[in-house]
Picture (spheres, rainbow, N blue to C red):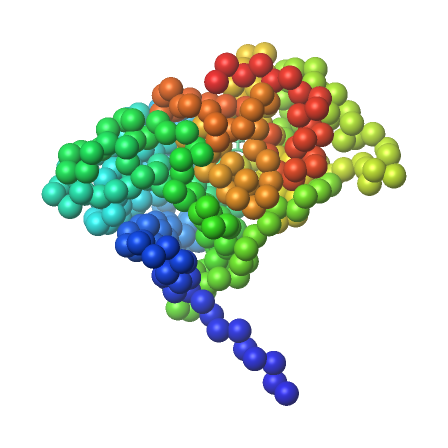
Length: 341
Ligand code: P6P
C-alpha cells in the first residue's frame, strides 16, 4: 500500500495551529513571524545571487560595532526595517547595525504589542567566500504603554522574557528555525512555492555531542580554564568517546545550527583583552540561548544563564558557552569565567 504522503505544512499553517493552543491568543505573534519570514525571503533572494549582481563587497562604512559593513548587510537591515515598519504587529526595532533603537510612531505601530531585535546578516564576513550566513531575530512583548512609541526599556529585557526567537540560515538550503515556550521547529524554504515548510518538527539539542566549536586562534588569550577544557577535548580517551572533533565556520548561525542538530558545544569565551568576548547579548546570544534551552540544551556565560543577564545597554557583549547539556556542563566545570556582565 502506498505510504501516505506527508502533507506540506507551511509556516503560516503551523503558526496558526500553534496559536489555537492558546485560547486567548490573537494571532498577532504569528502574523509578526510571517512578516519576519517575508523579509528573510527577500534577503535570501539577494544572498543567493550575491555573486552575480554588484551587491558583494564592502559598503565603505563601518557599523556601531566598528565592523566594516558589507553591501548585503545594509540591504538586509533596510529590508527588515521596511517590512516591520509596515507590519501591523511591530512597535519598533533594534538592530545590531544601528546605534539606537527605532520607534515606529504611526498610529498603528504605537498600538502594537511587540518589539523586534535582529542581527540582519550575521557572519557577513563570510559572504565573499560563499559560507553560510544568517539572520537572527528576537521578539519581546513591550513593557511600555500601548498607544505611545516604544522606549529603550522594551529592548533591554532579559532573554528569559522573550516571546519568540529564531534565525534564518542561508546555506545549502534556506531554513527558518524558531522557538517559543512551546518548543523549537525548523522550516525549509520550498522555492517553487516561496513558502517555508515544516521540515524539522520539535527540534531537540542532543544531550551529548562530540564537536567543539570556537576560534582556536584566540587560545593564547583565553583564561586557563578554557585552555584546560580544550586540552581535555584533544586528549585521547576512548572510553569517554574522545577525542572530539573541532569544527568552526566563523558564522554563529551556521556553528549554532550544527550544534543544535548534531550536538556539541559552541563557545566564544572572554579573554584578557575582551572580558565579555565578542558576541552581542541582545542580537546573538539571547536569541540563540532561548532556542537552545527550548531544545533541551544549556546556554551560559561562564557564571550563570545567558537568559538571566539583565541588559544594561543595547550593544553589550557576553561570553557564551552553548549547546549539549553534557558537554557544556563539562566545559563549565573547567571555566571560572569572570565576565563583568
Ligand atoms: P571570529 C561574525 O562576525 C560573528 O559575529 C559571529 O557570527 C561569529 O561566530 C563570530 O563573529 C566569529 O568571530 O573572531 O572567530 O572571526
